[in-house]
Image 1 (cartoon, helix red, strand yellow):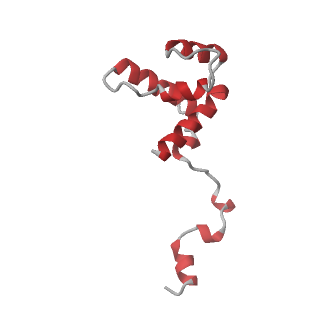
Image 2 (cartoon, one colour):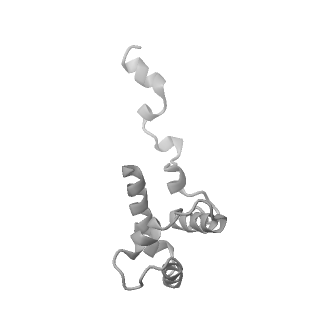
Image 3 (cartoon, rainbow, N blue to C red):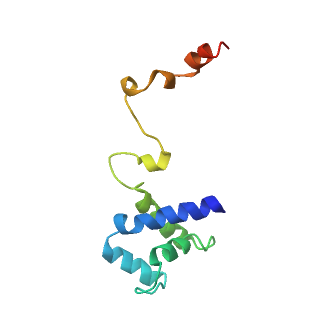
Amino acid sequence: MRNLKHERENLAKRVNSRLAPEERDRLYRKFRIPLDGKQRKLQLIYRLWIDPNDMEHIQESAEIVAKLIGFCETGHASKEMFELNFVLPSDKKPWLLGWSPISNLLNL
């Protein structure tokens, strides 16, 4: 539950930067969140995925989350999706290249 709460908070932080103001307002109205209410972003995120039997709701929730994490950006896969940082092998430190050098140091 703690991880789910953390994920929701991270998604809520991205609402302003990933969604246009008109789109945010449209979503707030659709999910019946007062435009002058407190913690609108968090309320919006908590209302996603609440009805697993409504396929339209599931599809819209998936589209919103995809926009927030940048999954639907064209041209490249989002590093947030995989939580990876890609670097050239020449930029890596020698101890990151594998277990062999580490096991050699430990005399294994």
